Length: 384
Ligand code: CMC
Image (cartoon, rainbow, N blue to C red; front, side, top):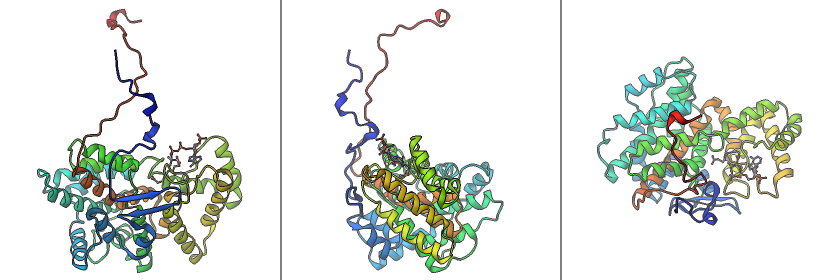
């Protein structure tokens, strides 16, 4: 008998090194610590682009003309409102539920209200994608306000994607500089090759399911602490450490106990994550400006201890190490850090989904079966 016993040598635990798709969206040079979107260096995009423009680039392959960008930006602004039934759902869900669980539920529900829900043309998929990108920040901000017992603040068409989100969370118009830094953080999170959540969105869409289902899968995947959930855990760790003097003992003890240090390590990078480098710069700048450097000092010491322990192994800070340290300054509470990751990454998810559908094939890997065979069925009355 030949049950699933494929070539053991082909087994790649966690699909490490497996090529599962062909994509022109983003690429990582893990040795050099480089990341490009559609060939453009992430540093250049962070410096010159906007989240709206980067999203257009990821989705359609080229930088937009002035008119294309204006239309795309307007389209995103006009699609920000969510149906009132979604607000009802947000209000009914437990107010202490994690915002990622609420986001997952809300995106799934949104699909049932989409005016294009019965259409599966490329045009309708793009419209759905833009609605999802536009509405994720609204859902996250509403979730926060509702959980705090505050009035929700409807989106404002006056503001950019990034600025509008900060405004919907706090009710105050952020200054241009802070909105710009937050916009950069969204750009940095927008795509990252075939990461776990993007892959799960592709697995779902590969069955020719709908884009809302694909994004729901992605949100559920991003939530885990080994992926997007790490940013929230970094702040927990900093709180546990308490002061810079405690760093060395804390990290060494944790490593000795084989605990993973959140915000460090990556499947692909063996160098400093370029996104972490950019966020670090802003974390430092904001902390110095506000004269509250304790978090940054702890982070610097953690980096130094981790370098001593792990430099040879190629374990460096990843994007999640500094993102929360930056978000705190904008009044974004810790529980929103991973949803904020989703606000950025949703651009990458929909881009990969749209791309994959152009040459779709269902994902169907195999497992090495290591269970028993030829086991006899024992009737229930004869079982001990
Ligand atoms: N702290 C301590 N040791 C680590 C860490 C870490 N953060 N990351 C990896 N290692 C060690 C690990 O213990 C293992 O050691 P050994 O070879 O002795 O068994 C070795 O490095 C390889 O680790 P791995 O877990 O097999 O690597 P992976 O590629 O399967 O996992 C990872 C990658 C990101 C899940 C992992 O590095 C990790 O758990 N990091 C902490 C969580 C985190 O920060 N996640 C965010 C990732 S970046 C943003 C994103 O894409 O979501």
